[in-house]
Image (cartoon, rainbow, N blue to C red; front, side, top):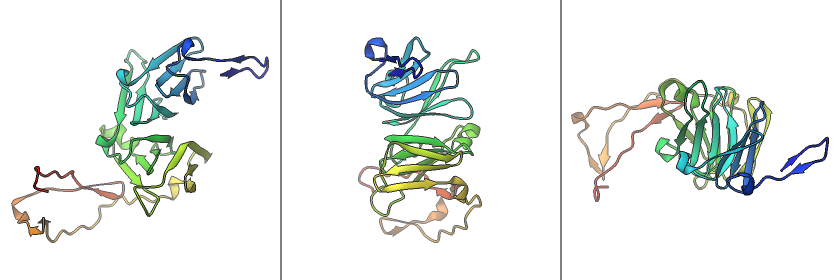
Length: 239
């Protein structure tokens, strides 16, 4: 619906007018009046006259768009039912580009209920099992995205957050609504340990059998206060 408070005129827009779905979850408006509309069946961009729609077949992670925000670099970020999508609008003779982030990038959960950028450019993602912090500043520099999961709960995979339930007190302080009360986040108070920890591995065993590690050489990366252990897979029946 579009309501003109001066004239009291009410306009209704639906699938018949070009929306991908009548179930609208979120509307984000830019300073030029362009509206980004999240629905149950895709994203719609409304310029005041026409709707341009995007779905999974156009590159989105999922058709359910729960929340929309904009980064300082001008990209549109979408919280979807299948992860987070970064939407680069076409400009300066560069074509439109969509990049998706999901479990393959380190997310423990992909059903995104909301997303929020802090002052340093980190993206906080509310899920049905805790908060996840996406290291967007490093991604811009290296092309690699690191995801840190904060369960905020002593049981299960994490606290469940509600859809679109956030309110900002300042550019770097926010309130999130969850199924277990309110969560207040101020990233400035979240101290990140950037120095590498002292780590000593004295022995390694596989299924209780010591491994002669002298035959192998490898290293571990350290990022955003945690050791990044490599994914380990075993042949079928050997785990």
